[in-house]
Length: 289
Image 1 (tube, rainbow, N blue to C red):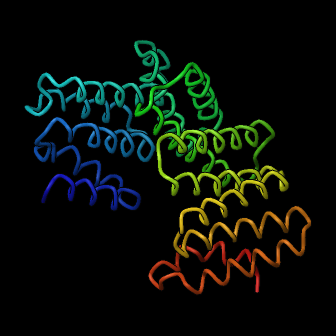
Image 2: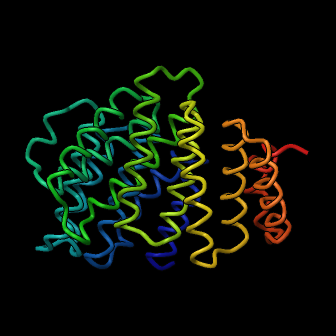
């Protein structure tokens, strides 16, 4: 099995079997054959041992062991990836001082990753605070191509999704949810393609709906539709864009807008390949008969 195959299998399995994947990661470091393998390996180690298991020290120990691998010897990029992942686990585990040695984009990356990790574990107050701090640091400027751009994009998305699923959000959590979704959109525009931007508009529309801001949700749902139209998006993407637009129009009290968007959503759904339709089930059900 190649490194890429190993990693893809681990990501595929980790949600349902995190303990098994953690053991697999701990006993398979020999698969790391190049310095470039270490950042993605460190990323999944931190994710599984942190967000899924809360096994902070075990994850830190495994990450530190990567430094002894021949592939890591003398490579600054490998060392930086290990150090950031170690700090992420330590901070998420309660050692706030572990972020102190980091500055600039490295600190932003750590804080954004901590936010995503804590949100996944339901520690929403700390997740919101970490993401807020990451955004504030990023306002000083991040260079194009910085890993911190993607960390902010991913972190914002994950914090927003987790909070959308919380039934008893208070006002601070609702505000944190919207800020995270907006951060996701802001930084996917720099770190991703039109596809990530379109999905970030969808996410922000969903968060705004959850926060009771239907009119603002309509605006971002319309932007989602526009990005799809401008990039000849496949039916799968257009279905979701029109579905969230329909839901937002209904929430805003626009019956005609709801009917028109629902019709478009259902039309695009009929063009979605059969093996992708299961992903559409929840949004389709929201549209009603």
